[in-house]
Length: 235
Picture 1 (cartoon, helix red, strand yellow):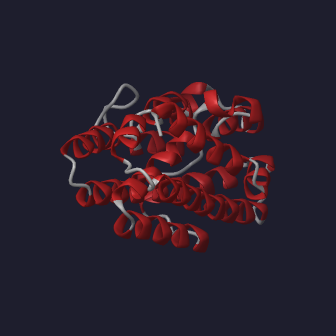
Picture 2 (cartoon, one colour; picture 1 turned 120 degrees about the vertical axis):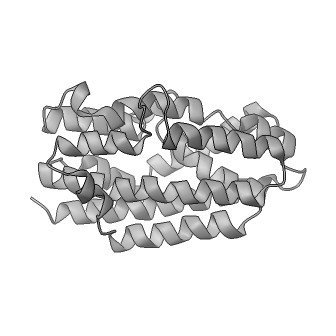
């Protein structure tokens, strides 16, 4: 498949994910300070664990260009980019302070059972699947913030949460650096590997790549569904 066909196929997987009942419940839940703290604590775990998945994909891939592309991606996440000179985890630290979380609170957060299960699932994909499939499973997560793809469905994850926190908590842009940054950064990241799929997915292997991308979105459903259930128990 060419890059446009990959964009269409992967994009439809993401759109289907946003139509799921778990995502509906999560985005319909009003945000309080306690619920905001829970979300950011689980997000901190999610972001740090993703730093394990990407290097594993690179380790399993023999293609130098792909390794370079992954390392470029991870430099922006871990070190600096246009949105932070301390890496993207710092965006969570900064937003966490607005709801009463210290850096230690974020780093020491206990995963929900569903978060822990999701981490195991994503790690298994990164460790054991063919590298093209594992690459799709990791990169598709960033498509969930692409408002260009998801605008007619209500927007991507960070766009929706930006609107929810603005309404429920009366937060300004400066109080939501993680949301404002990722609405833009992940549009760039969502396009980083389309040419890799076009050039390096062997003929006949396309369905395996798409199937694993769907599995990654199914794991995201469990991750967000678990947070929605936990938030419902909080004031």
